[in-house]
Length: 438
Image (cartoon, rainbow, N blue to C red; front, side):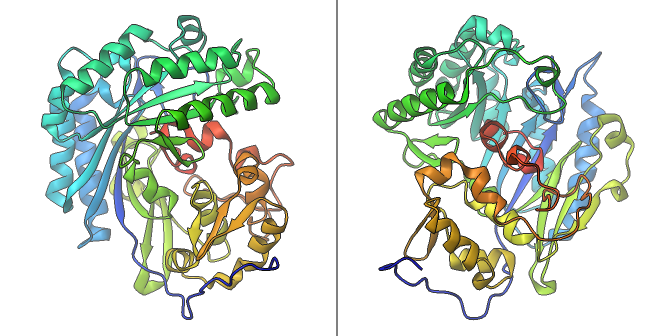
């Protein structure tokens, strides 16, 4: 312990608690797959199988609801893919299916992910009437050349119109996704994109770096990207502008105005529970009485998902040795960090189990001690991969399958990009280890 540091109040008898429960619903189709995207999404060919997919979602919700009977849903996230390809009436049916099987909290946050190029005039008012309370809009850039390079189907004007319609529909609590370190971009270009985004008065901004993810078209044919120093200069300049504009950074890539933090993603980042419904959707559930945590996953390919029975849901227990890493992978993304009580309650493990690693990273300057726990330092947020590697479980190399998020220390690459990157860590707000977009 550093000299003068206050002792942390450690719970005497850790016990796995039942955390808040959220619902994630995945819609896997897009008009066109973007070359940088590594999410579970597919270019729509032919007619959207709306009726069949909605019925399968209804069955999926009903089957999974039985495992969480008596627990209420605090938030819903409708992600993709492009959920806004589905009309408001279809989204309403999904929410009705959820309410029929699961108690939704009276103030539940319901977020719809939308592509500015797929929204017809007047649609946002209809989505709000269907039960949507928040929208995440994939702007990415306001530079036409950058949007073309990114393979986006919308124009800057589409984003401006969409934002106007969100305000008109009473959905002012919306997020804008914005990338930086784009091909050919410099700090002035990144600041110009940010200025145009802020001019639309969003309540929340997801600001993340374009990176080359394995398996994507960009990974196969990389575009010329700014180097790390240039990318850092863009991030620093944009952070200063966001702070001056009244936004607070509460997560590595998430900025919000007061009272507008994304509750659904905060549940991910504090190691809460969530049901994962839809093609390729992942979930996490805690069973306190059994001291058990499990991860779930549905078949990724839409045709397989549509024909799968309820038994197609894969389940895998999260072993106690894996829980510290999984907890830290989420909690250390938060600017405020976490407290010892939360670690014990969400993992069922004693805080002493991770105290040596935390103290070591504090000595390295990557963590700062708080009254009740730890938070990442500015240096730790910048080099989060280095920080997270310390919590990888010591066990033989193995394949965890699609229901897992945890690699092993033995199998970790020299550069921990597979553990965390700013794009995969903060992309469209969601917990990227679950392959769910936000």
